[in-house]
Length: 240
Image 1 (cartoon, helix red, strand yellow):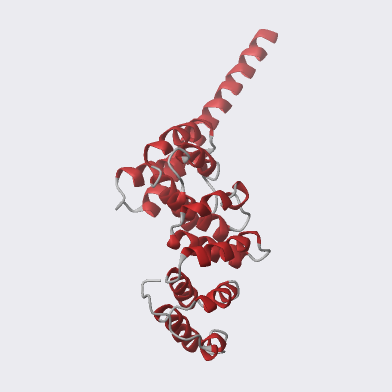
Image 2 (cartoon, rainbow, N blue to C red; image 1 turned 90 degrees about the vertical axis):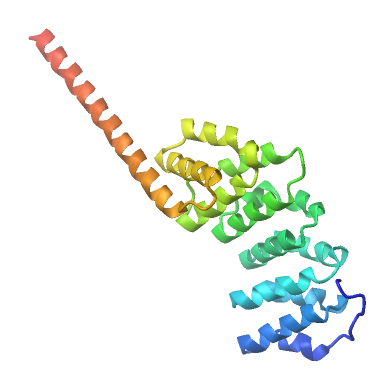
């Protein structure tokens, strides 16, 4: 906690976290962070798993970051195995904001490849923040396996995570460029552009790279068809 003075536990604040009105819940979460108390930890984390409002969820995370990591992290980690995608995603987000690297070992390949896009992209961000020295190459290889996945926003999240790994991402990106399909190759190109220029327009770059790779695939297909037709024609002449 940033303030050594612990205010009294307020049961009314805990009740307000589940109020019907989002603005009331937001004020309660803000109060929990402004006047942090260890007694709020369980209720804040439980609320993260079910809170429907983005801004309230973000305030809940902020309130948790105001408490000591040795109180919050042990309660957050079991949430990573929850059946609820929101619980998993919000726990990952909160762990990334707390920044305690002891949580790294709990960010499993299962989370990095989670079927839920929001969980996976939050796991990518958290892993890039918490990865210890010497594990960057392993993480880059895991993340490269997700290239080409999902919407533009999902792909942007993955590219940012890879960019955050620096030189460790270069090898996995080069391999993906050689072996991947056109969607993967386009995503690689957009990622490399983002690494070179973090201010670049990712969506425009991805769209342009997708068109280029699409045109190249069509040319390759056309060349293949022409070769087959030429071979077939030659066989017909020989047969005649």
